[in-house]
Image (cartoon, rainbow, N blue to C red; front, side, top):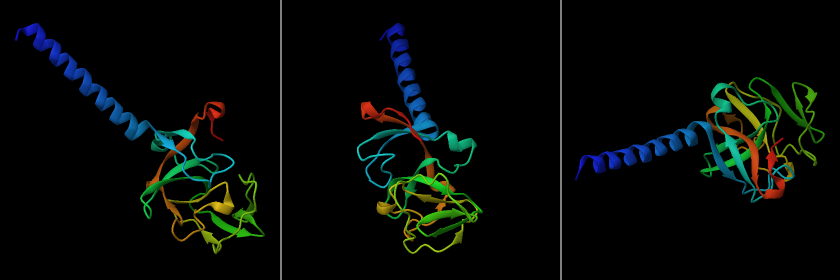
Length: 174
């Protein structure tokens, strides 16, 4: 094999390896695609919608109240999409079908339905953990449930920032 062919093959191998490394870095640290496969975030998100999840946001900052976050559900070994409601150190109370944070009613409350406590009792969010809820509070397994509880910061994968499917719903997620 002559030198020019070897150089061409080496060049292609370098290009392919570089593409894999860049793709790995982007998926691991920058963004990923997620499919909504639950009804717990309706009417904000519906089953079948495809989202872009920004991971890089939480490399440098913590989730804020109202962020739509993707988190690892270790019980069912899948991802959940929920809204960050309670931040570390805050006291969460659900009474009269409303959410209260440190004694003040959550406003906006990010839902069109009443919020039942589902057995949740007034609690302080531990440091390094978050209280999350679905916008469809009647059909959401979230921090009110013992199977989810307060979510560890390490289990929050990223922030849902953009909807790419369906075409007629493309846009920023609020």
